[in-house]
Length: 205
Image (cartoon, rainbow, N blue to C red; front, side, top):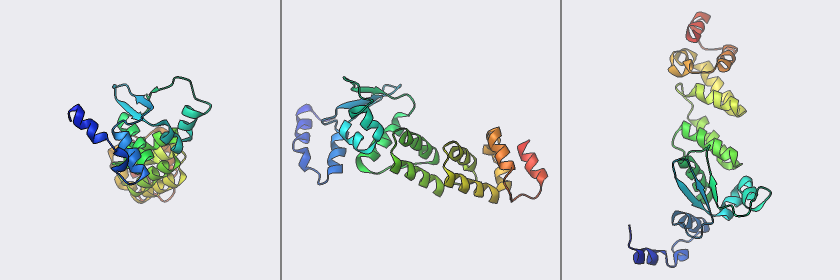
């Protein structure tokens, strides 16, 4: 790490080192400049942020810091239902507008975080990622995810994938992990692309 004097020099005139508001905000986030709130996690991770920037994107953060949910003296907020890396991804999106989703599981986790804090644009990006990355290996999990969150477009796309590739999906391990409710729903789908009902029943058994 930089010696203290060099680090201080690196911070001098930081406002003029970048030429856009979002980049200045990102610089301030990365270097913990002027931060006024922090989020802590079970593994002792800590993410420092700026209340105003969070509140500008999320109605929930606005209520937490400036509205009806505000409590005097609030500075450190414990997060127990979102992984630190996913929360950090959400914060990065708030500051610079980029989500950098890495996998379908990551998209589902990030969707959960964005839904909790009512960040609709990020929710939509997560759904778009899932729509673009449905395949035979993950379609059951995505179908259950869409059903749980009432994401109808995603649910219909997943159901169509199941209808078209039923034979290979029935043989995939993910099918055996599906909930009973999901299995019953899938059994009711019309035009499943399988050779016989016996094949379907064998997959269920």
